[in-house]
View 1 (cartoon, rainbow, N blue to C red):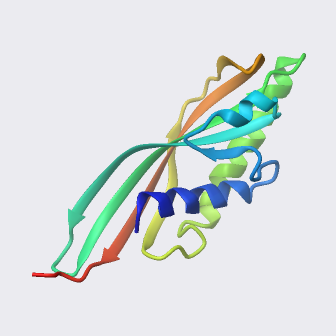
View 2: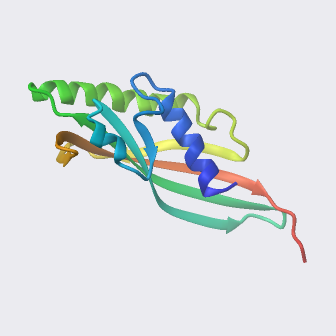
Length: 147
């Protein structure tokens, strides 16, 4: 499997969460924040481990940062309430689809952590509260040796 395929599978799962879709979930790009969306997710590749398991299989562990943004409201408690709802929904989605909806080779996909305080950021003239979540995806891939 490739980095691109794994990222896209994770993106697809987040887009299936209520309040998210193709217009506010992106891989490696913060462009949707410039349009003033109420909430957004940006998936950022963090690191990768690659190990030989045996002669015919390799194991990959892919780690990503998921940046969750909630637009600042006149009442800041609204942004915090939206965050709690969206954070829980994303965690639940990965709990319900730990194989990324049967993506080939995926053994597990889990939110392993995150921060509990939002950071105020400004993008496109809009203020957002931003939180960080950690996603770890483990896969096993069969390989055909060529030597």
